Image (tube, rainbow, N blue to C red; front, side, top):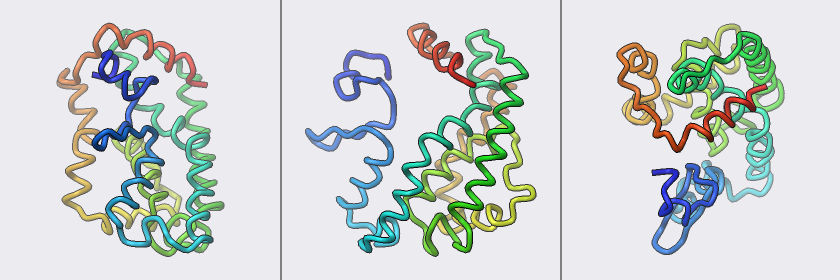
Amino acid sequence: HLVSGEFSQFNILQKVSTLKDGDFVLTESTAILIYLSFKYQTADHWYSSELWARFHAHKYLGWHADCIRDTFGVPLWTQVLAPLIGVHVTEEKVERNRATTDRALQWLEDKFLGGWAFLNSQQVTLADLMVLEELVQSVALGCDLFEGQLKLAAWRDVEAFLGTDLCQETHGPILNILEQTANKTVLQPPPELSLYMLFYISRIP
C-alpha cells in the first residue's frame, strides 16, 4: 500500500517505482532499470558499454521526465482517475494536453529518432522501454499517437522485439482500462489517496 507507514520506510515520496533487493532499496524507474541491467548483466544494447552510446541514451532519459512523463499520462487522469474521486478536468486543460502531446511526438521524431531505428540508436535501449510505457497509457485511452508519425509508427516495432506475449502480459491491464471503467470494475482509491490525487490533478497545466 503506497500510503502505508511500511512503504514510506522504503520511499518517503510514497511512489512507485521502488525496488527492494535484499537490504538495498532503490527508487526512480531510470535508476532501477540501470541497476537491473548491471546486476543481471543484460545484453549490451540495453545499456551500452560504449560511452557515446550510453550517453545518447541518457540524453533522452534526461528529457523524458520533463517532456514525456507528465504529458502522456494525463488522459488516464482526466478520463479515469479524476472521475473516481468526483473531479472534472476542464476541456481547456484536455485540449492543452493534446497540443502538448502533439509537440512532444514531433520532438521524439525530430530530435531522438531522426535516422535511427530506435531512440538515438539502431538497437533497442532502456530509453525505448521508458517511452513505450508512457505512450501506451495514451494508446489505452483511445489516442492514436502514431497517425501521421511515420518514424514513430516504424519505431513501434519495439513491441515486436520485446515479444507479443510479454507486451500483452505487461500492458493488458492498462489496455483494458476503458472497459474496466465502463463496467465500474476499476478499484476505488482509498480515501487517504484523495489529497494526493487532488494535488496531482491541480498541477495538470
